[in-house]
Length: 207
Image (cartoon, rainbow, N blue to C red; front, side, top):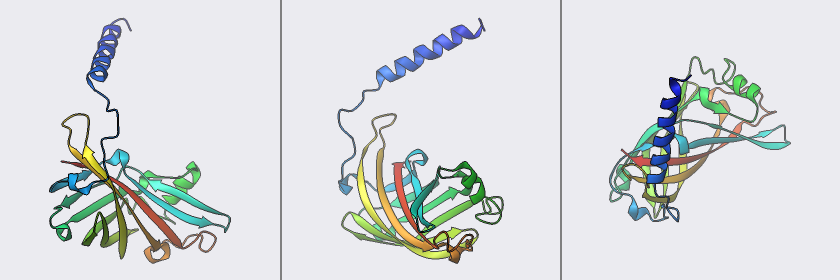
């Protein structure tokens, strides 16, 4: 323990120094101005991106959960938005609700079967811009089944990060609805609705 104490003290001093060197902004660096976004390839910020699903449970409540830690990229040219390409993968093992028992049940063989199908993916096939918003058509693959879906995307904001290399970052929120039975996920229908509303809160940062 005595040998570790100097190392622990040094780590604490370094941490304090790093925090002291980081000047916190006095206002949010993001702005709802899409002109801030430049041409390039952006990667998903996994800590600030969520795939949220909502179903009707027993006719009593609307119940939501989410998938954590997605990965993916967005290739974007603001002057040619139709050439944009989005690819996203989210691990089924990262599904989270308010019930640990349900989290485990959703990963079981009679539902998502995460052992056999560890990831769900979305790959865009068409992007149509309308001002700062967009309609994104693409292939959604869940449980080994691929279906065409259409996302309605709303631009949220963009700006430069205030840490590290101060890269351009931006985000959008997208929504769609699917029928889970079309992906082979019929467990508990109709007690839990076939319709699933999806909201993707996506954060991206320049590579």
